[in-house]
Amino acid sequence: MNILETKNVYYTMHIIISLASSIMFTTYAIYYIEELGLNPLQLILIGTAIELTVIVFESVTGVVADTYSRRLSIIIATFILGAAFIFEGSIPYMNGSMLVAGVLSAFVLLLIGEFIRGIGETFLSGADQAWLTDEVGEEAVAKIFVRTNQLRLIASLIGIMISVALASIALNLPYLAGGSLYILLGIFLCIYMKEKNFERVEHADVNPLKAMSGTFISGVSFIKNKPVLIMLLVVTIFIGATSEGFDRLWEAHLLEAFTFPSIGSLDVVVWFGVIQFVGTLISIGAMEWYQRRFDVNHPKVIRYSLFYFTIGQVIFLVLFAVTPSFYLAIGCFWVLGIIGSISAPMYQAWLNQQLESKSRATVLSIMGQGNAVGQGFGGPFVGVIATRYYIRTALVLSAMLLLPEVILYGKVMKR
Image (cartoon, rainbow, N blue to C red; front, side):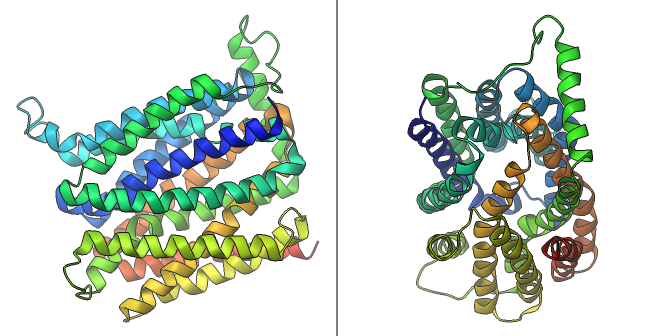
């Protein structure tokens, strides 16, 4: 399988994932709040459920990917995720059934769905990046990651429109559509995804536990011997703590803090679609400009970019939380989207450049666990603040959790 074919499979995989995610998550908060009746704390606890699942299973599935096959791990993930999302989209029908009614609430059913989803996410986490890096080489991944993010954003534009159209019919339809796309992706990968450069661990079939434990120990040892990876692990924890608060509460903040301006017959569902559609367009343009203006493969460019973007993230997240202006809040949301769309692939590239092939997926999974720890512990705390006081206060707290990340990036810049 040549580099072009590998890139095309990787691009296709992430286009479909982004399309499915955009279809589901553009209007998911409205589905959770209006259809399923969740409050701010329950919104956070839903996120905590998936993160606790990741903490428990992430290393195990990463070791499976490094020991047996990254391709197999990715394919398993797509089918599990598809099943989980279809299950979550079917909750309104379950609530109306005699079997479930009065026994399991929508919240509990959603927790079950997120647990299943969490297992699927752990099979995917790290395996896709490890597969790509081994197939095309470390020197080529940075530009592929950036281009992938651009394609993901374009796919999400289409997904936003589909999400609004489906949610206008029924709020659960986006989840059913997104889950079905994951199932179709799994079938596509079974046919077209190849794995040529992966070296399976010896005796993996004869003594699987020994082989998997050896892979895990190798990954942990590799992290311990590289200070930059320890630093990135700490950074990942704080990224997780911040993202859980913002990702789960930004829609609720807009709904609580503002009266949406009346423009024709636009309802709230369409408003959220417009906000995300325009924000995605802006992010696509910003990413293209940044990639043309700077050498995103250069380690110094990556380090400086992450430092200054994180400072910007703190500033605009605080401004998003405290501004009394609806339009300024939307502008801050768009700027935060630009920062995330540029910094995320650069962080991925920098991380992958530090890793060795034999334990790449394991180390990436450990990093994923760090993110999950941040979300699992930071999320409920932020959720309690949002429920007992104000969502604004919780969002400002989320911004403050990024300050240690700024300090760590600053130390790296001085080296």
